[in-house]
Image (cartoon, rainbow, N blue to C red; front, side):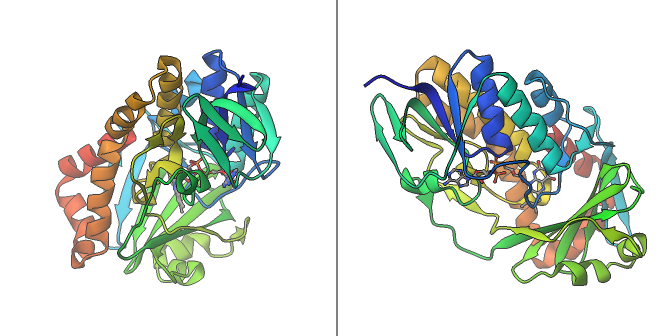
Length: 341
Ligand SMILES: Cc1cc2nc3c(=O)[nH]c(=O)nc-3n(C[C@H](O)[C@H](O)[C@H](O)COP(=O)(O)OP(=O)(O)OC[C@H]3O[C@@H](n4cnc5c(N)ncnc54)[C@H](O)[C@@H]3O)c2cc1C
């Protein structure tokens, strides 16, 4: 059977689009299957770590946003600041990131098919999905990936689950650090995304409420006093999702679909862009077996550090996190740097 295209990407979020761009830059033909049209919004802290920007620049993308010079952990009494040593990050509204990626993908000739994938057939030479025959399938369909389930790669996750909520406010940014407010039960990430817009993401257990969480943090409530909400509250989760492994034959999982730990380290996008590039390298090499090892190497630090921080955040040690970061700036700084690369 002849292939219509080299690669079909299921999911046109940021990682799926980055994978399509990578594929076109490598001279491969590609179709992205995505049910939603227009600039896609999603619950996200919208912080691009310094390491994400060179990955995007390589794809020819320089999205508009606000510079992020480091990270501040605060509990209202103490704080710990770390300024990135490896460059600066950027706060970018998800819709702006999506538009930049989608327009670059179009410009490079990536095709688009509107639709949701609910079934595919997979054999030794390729994949047939929504009437398209492709040599490879990239599953980039997010946290609750259908491709992961259909490829029998889903792993059941147990334990307490965490969720995220986000909303924007029209207010002049007051800091160029990503502020992380450690409240009693949730963390609130504050990220400037334009000269008049700040995004807030609340991460916590099921049932965390956006307004109540902000109201319980006096310094944050004062900053937002009178500020007009500029978006609705969007939610996502549960965060923790696992795949048995990130590929089966010619089906490669990329981005959140390949497994996710937590948004606590603000890492998903950089990691997903890296995985997109590894997936295309795998196609070029023609050896599906190489993907799992490369994926494991690329995501190891994220998985280890994020798992450790989440465990501490969900334990009685939680109250000690900000004081410890303030008391041990070298350790705090090296963890942030490790994740910012
Ligand atoms: C509250 C919160 C805060 C976060 N903060 C940050 C941060 O500050 N920095 C950072 O880097 N990361 C952050 N993340 C993580 C980041 O949002 C994700 O890692 C990123 O969105 C992953 O992109 P993706 O393209 O893999 O998946 P998604 O963005 O979820 O895109 C998946 C796409 O697949 C489509 N799709 C789904 N099912 C199907 C189907 N069956 N067929 C076809 N298409 C389908 C969807 O419509 C969607 O467009 C945060 C996440 C949350 C929840």
